[in-house]
Length: 244
Ligand code: NAP
Image 1 (tube, protein in one colour):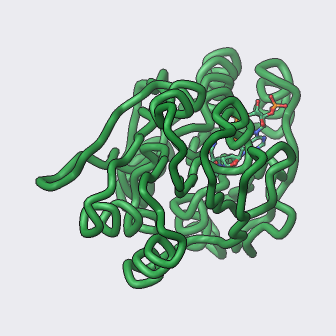
Image 2 (cartoon, protein in one colour):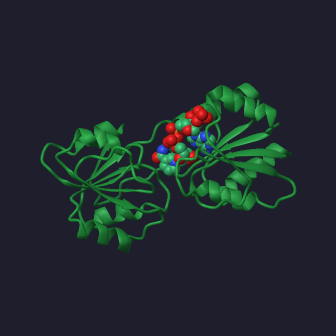
């Protein structure tokens, strides 16, 4: 059975490891090519966009793909929407492999917003020291709030960071001790995060709770796919179901 796995997440890497070397599946992993040093993957990998819905539809048909698994990041909304449309056009079963959202716990002070631009406004007028963890691509939205100092963590450097910035280039996972040390040493007074979910980056929320820091949390875009799986075991079960 021929599978296409849309990746760029730790869940995709884990599923790739589980599918690698199996005689009953011929799986290919697809990456957008955003990071300059992508992690090593266990499956044959293709890199770069497909060329929109039409390009992905053509890819699915030309490569006789029999099942499509969208294991992109919860904020990769365009790719996920394209996957829904292309899977339908090509008649290929599709499932999304994702992670549950984070939810606020007792002691948390979250201000939930829809977009990065709204998050920048939610920081307020008075200058703050902000730990910005929204990724390279959305960092530019914070140029609209230049009164704040940002400690901006991302895998690769952003092209258009806000003016007062310290870049911290690092790849998850991050531990609670590391997050506490980073936030305390930089005298952070506010955290900005996307609601990505998952374990690899959740320690920053635990650290913010301990330090009693407010969190501006960007909500997830809605999911269009019908079949949503919350773990690699579920994904393997779904794949076996399609194959049988
Ligand atoms: P996006 O805005 O939804 O996608 C933009 C375009 O990038 C897509 O239309 C597609 O181009 C191409 N693309 C995205 N994912 C792809 C994949 N797995 N394989 C081939 N092409 C892909 O996505 P994004 O937010 O830029 O994310 C890009 C990648 O980074 C994804 O793999 C995602 O899982 C990963 N990532 C994203 C975030 C985040 O916060 N957004 C965080 C961590 C990791 P075409 O239209 O030309 O096909």
